[in-house]
Image 1 (spheres, helix red, strand yellow):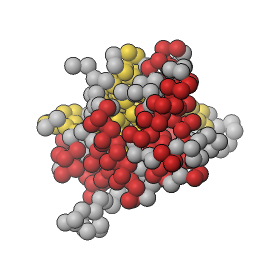
Image 2 (cartoon, helix red, strand yellow):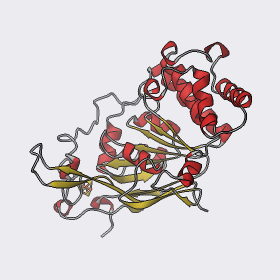
Image 3 (cartoon, helix red, strand yellow):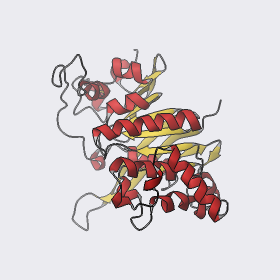
Length: 324
Ligand code: SF4
């Protein structure tokens, strides 16, 4: 069965100078390096990793907001064009984005109702009265009371703004929402409301989510499948319960160990990694994680491990997990 979203060997390189010196030679930075995954209709893939690991660049590549250096993105069987032409616009209508900061995502000069009906105007969908009626229905369906419809973004709370962003993203009836840290700018109490709303929407509209977050607890809660990224690559992927209960890759083990649970205090059993993630312009050879890995072998500095099936529908890229 073909997936709604199929990403194959996606790579994005940038050229940047090796130093601030203007004559220094440009070097290639791989923000995303050979990433592959699938998202089925109505399902959620959670993408986790530290800041700067390539999650947000992956989101932009998926939506065709920047061209890949190599690799492909297929949406509902069609190749997502790397140019913003009529074919891209037609696909883009069915793939919407939910950003981290709802205030930045909204136009401060427009009321909530204007913002939600705007995508229908852009795509010339229906007549003006019908568009506003549909926008009102969508706003009500995400739990916005009518007295907020004519308010401006600065007159709404963070949670209300994110509901407007969601209503705006849903108004065209997309099949995929790319959610880039959709709750990290919200208070903890509001985060739970927005997460529950996303789940309700998925159950009702059968929308698929590519859910990007650094918050493992949130990702575990919303995802059907989780992919862990480190320096532009997926290092582990699998069903959330198994992956969080028994992480296979040393990097995933460190991430999971930092999440407090009711039966474990914040510091007990925590794996503290050495140093910060390396500069993406100077990715270490072999396994990119080896300078920080508490279990590195001599081979790890020489040879990059390949993402390999490890049973139970899981994959990991680590020499420790490859049978001799
Ligand atoms: S391949 Fe080596 S360095 Fe990389 S995660 Fe596995 S053990 Fe650690």
